[in-house]
Each structure stands twice: as C-alpha cells, then as structure tokens.
Amino acid sequence: MIAKGRVLVNTVSCLRYGLDEAKGAEIVLRQYVVGDNAQEIAQEFAGFQEQYHGSHRKLLGFMLSPTPEDGRGLDRPQLKEIAQRFLKRMELGEHQAVAIVHRDREHVHLHLYVNRVDLMGGHHRSCFLNLRTAAAAEQVALTMGLTTVKEAIRQKLEPSKEIRGEIKAVHDKVIRRERPRNYDRYMKAMEKYRVKPIPFVNKRNELVGFRFQYKDQSFKGSEVHPDMSMRNIAKQLSFDRRELKRIIVERRMPFMGKSVKVPFHLAKVLIAKSIQMAQRVARDSAIEI
Image (cartoon, rainbow, N blue to C red; front, side, top):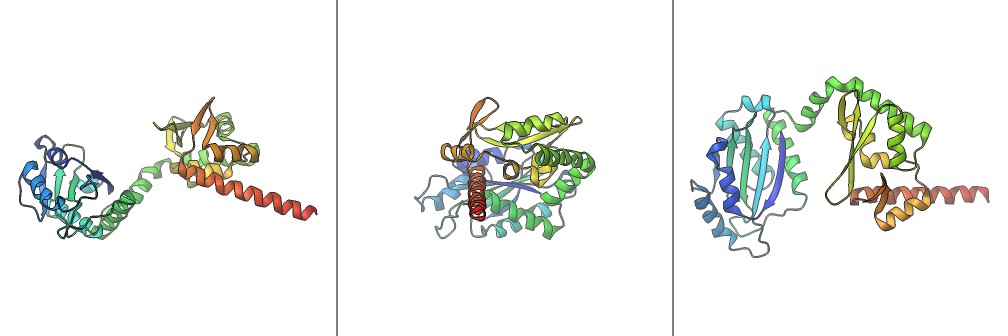
C-alpha cells in the first residue's frame, strides 16, 4: 500500500476534490464530522481551526493506495478499517476527519482529510510527515494482510532480476577498473558497456538521481541495487580532493557541460567523503615520517 501525506491550505477546495462524484467518491469514515458536502464539513473543521493561530495550513491530506489486486477485494467496512487504523497510527484519533474512497482509476484508493487542530485546540506536527505516513501505512498493511510497498517493489522487480544483475556487474567493473573521478566520467564509462545512465535534474537545477537504460529496459539506480543510488555512487567515485572541496564550498558542480546544484543529502555524503580522504592523507603522511 502506497501512502503520501501533505499539509494543505484551502479546506473547501480540497474537500470538493475529494467528494467529486465523477471520481466515484464515497465517504467510508466520519470522525467527529456529520456534514455531507465540502462546505458543511469545512465549516465544522473551521470551528476548531479558529482556536489555533500559529499557521494558516490547518488541513492534513493523505492518500492511501492499496495495490490493484488488494483493492479489488476490499469492501466498504475494510476500507473504513484501513482509515481508522491509519489515523490511530498517526496519532490523529482526536481530530476531525473524513475518509473518502475513489474508484475512478484502475484501483481503489482512499483520500483522508484531517483537521490539523484537534478537539482540544492542539496542533498536529508536520515534521517528517511523509516518512511517518509511509511507516504508518506499512504497519496497517502488515496488520491487515495487505501488500506493503517493499513487497510490491520486490514483486515488480523479480522478473528483471537477471538484467539488473548485469547492470550492477557493469557498475562494479567501472568503479573498480575506471575509477571515475566525477559523475561525467562515470556516465561515459558506463556507456562504454552499453549501459546508459539517464540523469534527473529537478526544477531547482539539482542533480537528484539516475535511471539506467539497458537492453530496452530502464530502472532507477536504487532499483538496480542500493549501491547505485546517487548518494552511494558518490561514495564510490574517486574525486579529486581539491575539486571535492570546491564542490562542497560552492554547493555546485560541473555536470554535462553545465553547473548544477548539489542537494543537501548529497552534500552531506561529499563532506563525509572529504573528511575520510583528509584522514587517509594524514595517516599516510604519519607513516612516511
């Protein structure tokens, strides 16, 4: 079961989307709510939201999506149970909430809209919301015998196990023999063995990951092997020390003829690598003395 969570602003608009009849919407759970439409439910939420003035984002929105196979076998009481268990795991049992099932796609999925302000005027924290959402959904899926995200990924990738092994073997050969000093050289070395790395640069001009294309198939680096995530590739590259320091200071690096930003999680890896390199140099110098 896939799960995502967001902090939202416009309660009425979000509820209107959730209750859109064109999506086959049906309320399967009401928690401290009696209204039937978006306007009524938003007004009920507002009664408690007015007690808290610390933030204008006073609505939590969650999407819980069982696998298509699981979804086909879930009836209304089971969908309600999923929502109840999830809310309990997220410590949202004392908050107004509605859970709405949508049946307009290949598989059924739930939208939960939760008042961020509880019945006592307290405010639910939003830190690490997506991580907590995923963890709660994982536990609900395990409890109810549904397919977890990890199991769904394993099932999806099982048929490609052999070809992913070939890609990983090329990666290991490149790291061991070529000792590439940056991502550009790593990509060129991989292409020599007919594996094409496809970088993803986000809207903030940050390099955030790679896909690997091989024999008409394409996989995210982490799908091929954990060693091939962008951060783990960085740990294996043979950076020049001075170049690495410059990247860390500027939080930018040359890439494919341009300059791209280094995202925070990658910067942490590069800093750790720089420290390790400095310690190695100091150790080698001490041995020579």
